[in-house]
Image (tube, rainbow, N blue to C red; front, side, top):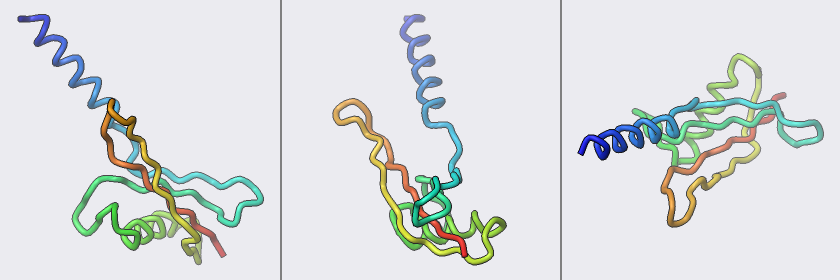
Length: 101
């Protein structure tokens, strides 16, 4: 019985580590791309933010880049499915592509 409880605790901690991470990440785009930044926005719900709504994702990305770009606009976005069919279920990652003036 103790081993089952120990394994359950171990897998719960392991699952928590897999979900932990930065909710938002900004990357500089490589040269020659029609955008300057790649913003990985959070995929969890918050008050006033729904990750499934494109306008909310775009607003969050522009707010994050406010200190780096004077005039920024969204040129595209993408949804990256991280689910492994039949093995894991997880929320998709959302990426917003931003161009600076």
